[in-house]
Amino acid sequence: MGRMRSKRVGARIAKLVEEAIVDCDTEEEQHGSFLVMLEEHLRCPVRALVVGEDVTVVGFDRDSPGEIVARCRRDRRVHRANVTALEWSGAPAQGAEWIEAYRAWLRGGPGA
Image (cartoon, rainbow, N blue to C red):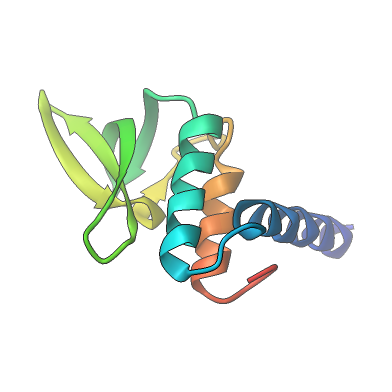
C-alpha cells in the first residue's frame, strides 16, 4: 500500500511541476512561475519550521540567483530563508505540495 501511495504522490508532484513550467522558456521564467504558484496556493501567514525554529511565513520573494525565498517572521523580525528549508511541525500547510514540486524541479525530478 505504501508503494502505491508513493507512486500517486510522485505522479501528483510531476503534474504540479508540469503545470508550473508548461509555458516557460527559461529557467528564470520557471522560478518565477513557481513563485506565482506558491503565492496563489500557499496562504500566508502560515506556521513552519526553519532549522528547527518556529517561524511564521508571511510571504515569498525571489532571491538574486533566482531561487525562491520565504519571508519568515520570528520575534518581531523578518528573516529570509530558502523556501526549500521550510518544514512542518505537524500536517503540511494547505498548498505545501507546491514546495514539494519546486524541490522536485530543482533536483531535476518529476516533470522537470
